[in-house]
Length: 408
Image (tube, rainbow, N blue to C red; front, side, top):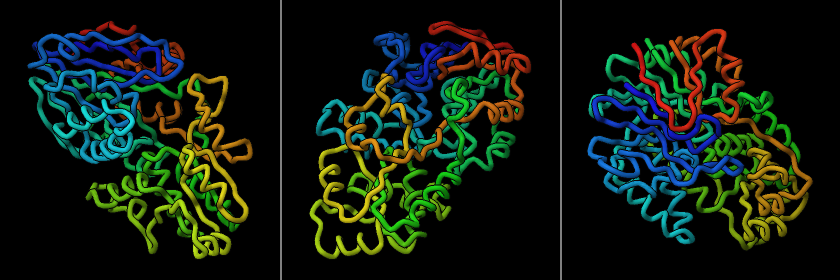
């Protein structure tokens, strides 16, 4: 087996990894580059974007744009494999934006024709035997892959963490699905961000519940596809006896999770409680006003004019929260979102924790996997990754476009 990192050896996002064996090509992710990355332009990759694709396939780890966002550039005939619920959530998002971006209709068609898998599924593509391992990330239904060919076992981590609600059984999962690993192709997002995971998702929920003791309008800006955060804050509102408001788009995402039959929806966290979320009406009647004044509310906001107008009309006291990466409202960052910054204002509370693993926990995971070698991707500081883990493992630093022939 040969591994080629086409992009992602020295940047977060936009990763494209290729596994090649006996003329077959298995690609993992094909996403957009993040703002601030050194943009490489369109990739020309044999067996993926051009040439013979009859022995090629693409695996998608999860629905974030930096992993799936460029698939519209691929031939429609290319087989795509993706988690079923992740595909459904992505299609809701794409349909939501397709009126403004007609190209997304092509992506919807491609995903509707995708081969869908569920946690623990095993399947073959040519000489590759693949196991889909469901892991915890800020995207729901995200996966790592065990990829076997030519007697070599590779664990492709995808983006993951160990401080979320669904992280408790990661050691058990790895012992079952990821034993005898030779190589780990490993994300390293937080290698230079020591404070990115200062709280667990459960601690974040507890912190939010403390603020809800104040009967006011609590307005939260978060990603509508951050399922854990959405349901976590919903249940916090339930416990506080507050109505929880979303718009129709956000409600459709929550409904998709609740009705999915996914293994995780057996948990009460991903089900509705005594009172379902309420779809926000843009015209407030007297009953709504009285309820908010008496009970307060939680409103999941987006940086749109209709939300801005509705928030302005909300009665009583208001408190805003940022529950996503603060780089979106930092003018010094390439990812700065002026509209979000304007909607949020300056008087807000930051309540966020990363969707990626911290490096102390990474040590524990790598010791469970016990690989012969590690290839870091999805990191803007590969040298720091090598320095951190190089004493214990062989860390192989590739540059974009470079390959390694795997040894058993």
